[in-house]
Amino acid sequence: MPDAASRPQHTGGRPTPEMSAQLDRQILEVATAFFVEQGYAATSLEKIARMIGCSKATLYRRYSSKEDLFKAVVAARGRMLLEEAEAVEASSTDPLVATREIALFFLDFMLRPETREAYRIVIGDGHRIPFIADEMITTIGEPFVATISRLISAAAAAGRLQSTDHEETTRVLMSLVTGWPLQNTMLGQNCMDDAGARRQFFDRAWGIFLSGVCPRNST
Image (cartoon, rainbow, N blue to C red; front, side, top):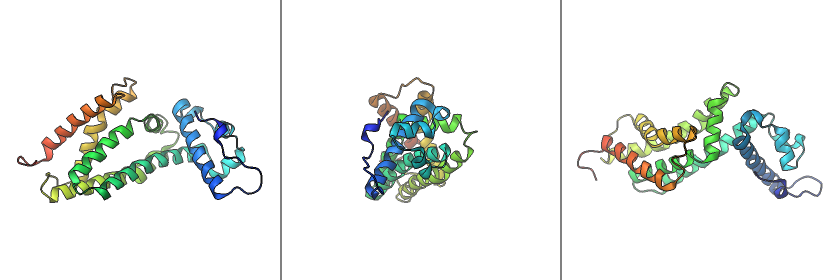
């Protein structure tokens, strides 16, 4: 877990924009570590403020509650996913290759400890923070599905695959790629910790996906 030694040094007066931005990053870093290591229920703003070395008032000015802070942690993870997907979409000239690249990144991303534990909290503590799941769907899930759906639509238009409901095709692909690995990891089996095992599983899942959506003579 990050320690307080790396906190922004402040000698008095109003903090500079750089110092404020650094503190914002550290709050999210420390909060993520607490949520991952201690769980949602055992994490408090007081503990986070103490670890960072800032006052509770400073933290409460940014986040009015633990729920707001956890929402910010989830949003930060979501931005990372969406930025990667959008970058691949923008740089690729082959929509099918781009879809494969994003799907592989998605598998790795979902199995990272920070993402996995945030997902576990949403599932296990959803009754405490019911708005989080809805917000994840709206701000992360739907834009991510839309990005892949556009790529699948482009691949279909080019005759690379067969798809009429591109959102449904996207969801089938994501289920194939992450369904078993995520379930296995959430159950503590950790069979997908090894990068080679993940890649082998992904290649098999991608092959099954292609066998269902590609025209017979497609390459």
